[in-house]
Image (cartoon, rainbow, N blue to C red):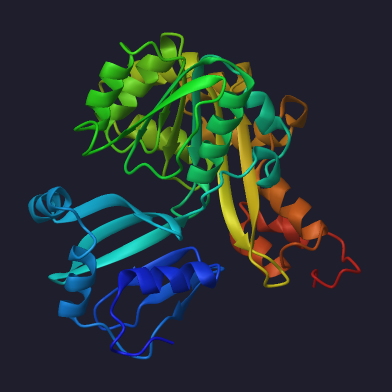
Length: 363
């Protein structure tokens, strides 16, 4: 535990990494907290004051970043600490006081085969055009999955890969492909602007770290329609809701056009969650994959989202599976508890109807 004389962001980031925690939180009235396997643990025996937080956060920002924070009242940024690694930071105000959260970015990009996805994800890496969406809540591992895919593609075929990120997290090496990473606020002023200009930069693949607004969504869909492979994240809990999120971002009079465009270019939606392991040693990945075959496209055109789930359940030969399929697999392997499976299940009855196992994780 740090004493009150230790007020150094690098110290707390070092403690976060040394404990194998994922995030550091600096908040007024609380000790510096690290997120370890989903739970918060204190890194000091004292609470931070408003002045403490402000000094800690402003001390690591550049003049340009301070100006952006002063103007926008919040800031996404990347921080490189020598000998420690790279972090994604977010500075923001809470009840008038400056606070921040930091996410540790591993220096090595994990191999896509080691993340816990089903083998079918490798087939999606072979696509050359269309839109693939990655969805999940914050902290579900979407960025890591995207980085692993970009690294794998770059190692397997030639082309130009353009990423638009806020901020840049993983750093890619140029392998068979040339990877151009562009950061919001440093290399470009906005996602839509970067995407419009990306189409004139001879890209084969475009990666968007987050589709936040209608214009970004429209430009991304248009890029996927014109022969590019577009990879993007959306903050929703599952595959059908990702499509609802995109469509509902547009006014009613524009939705028929967006639905038609999505039905033409969408290739797949990958949803993921990180769940606590049954043995308490970290977290494990649960996933859902929806592949846009003719039946899924018909449901999309008619906005029959509830039927997509049934189609995913019966289309395993095409690479699809639901979150419940993934939970059952993890449960049968003893990797998660039955309670955790029930909390995350779309249909808890499928979990309750499983026969008792000798592993002891079933009740």
